[in-house]
Image (tube, rainbow, N blue to C red):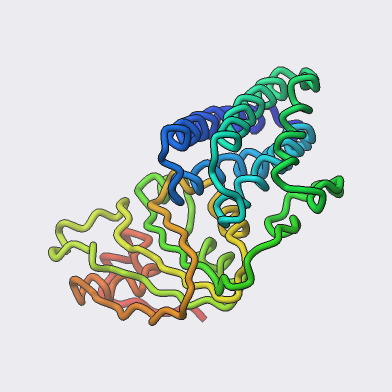
Length: 282
């Protein structure tokens, strides 16, 4: 895959959007909006760049992004305090990450005189325990070892696919199966957005909101990895769960439409839709 120019071009195009999101988030933090949502958005941008760069063996980019996201993970876990010095280093790290993406795109070596001082500043926030060299990077969600708080009992994921999600050929079932493999999960669907009148139903729209309550999950890195390439195609919310949640009860807005949606395979072909009776093939 790393030798495919078209896929690599797509990666760098995606990086441009992620760098914009990163810059906006860091600016908001500098201006005093270092809330959980902003910090998580900055973390996701850096993590997405690192994950995709690993698939193309862009080692310098991966190494710097790893150190950058580790500091951000400490910040969002409340193990670091936001102060003027930390914000200054994060701003510099954002600039360096953008330069590393540009260097990788132009296939030129990174400027170590620029990169190394910022790496050292990031490391200063982590102490000696994270100063060990990384093993060979494997593009896999849960191979990195991040110390996480033991009081986290899991995460709740809520996502509602938009029209572009389905237009690109994505399937919510695949995401749900991947989430279910992360830990013991409870899955529910909210269909209250379904139209009351069947004539108003748009087959290319996304009406269902899926909620997956995952227990015994110490970090959300695996979740972020699963949604890495579709997070902009759906309304996604990820939040830690501190106490067990009661599974949502189904609340259909229209019983007839809800019944149809429970049998989606019968509606994939116009010919089948017009057939009065269906028989199963042996």
